[in-house]
Image (cartoon, rainbow, N blue to C red; front, side):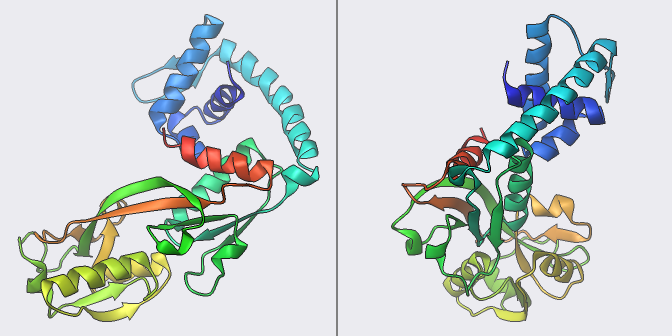
Length: 281
């Protein structure tokens, strides 16, 4: 029985939802469900009544929830007090040059388990000095050759346009799009470099209609039909009015790494690195 297992139960009991807990802790729903199931097996009793599409906290679960709520309030106070020591309380600085939303979600989830650790986050892609940050989240780059790293996220990239775009549903090559307007997340962004390299390989220079470094603005521009943009394959499902194009010679893979110093000056940094590295398993 582990503390994180009990926290999964507490959140699931509070919201009567495994999926809500999964979002809060940045893990798959199956991980939460399996963890609670193991807890029930260890206790020898079910804590939820399960229906077709929902879970309902039963009386045994309610008693455990009430007791754990009081206990974890004391644990969180103790963690906060422990974090006031110099080694743990040191601020964690993170330079985010990729996956802004995912990093934000990870920090939210981490602070639910270690509330005493503070963060400083910078999303600027060009103006920040990487050497001044404890962690860097970015694509493959020789800029951080003095650091250790691990692959944190990987996904295919696709070209996307507004749902009503004539290019939707028609198989074509990248060169067929040479006269179209494109959108960019900024000249210093990873996706801009990928788009530029792919178009140059196809024999043309992409015409950038709008360049912006805000993901919500970028997605809105794509959905409005202002231009064609590079998006993660998972992105279309979450964006109404956006469709992927069928482009035979655009096959790009996006890998994002967490870069960190081999010698980490605080327990908080070590724990956060472990949280990021192990949280996807």
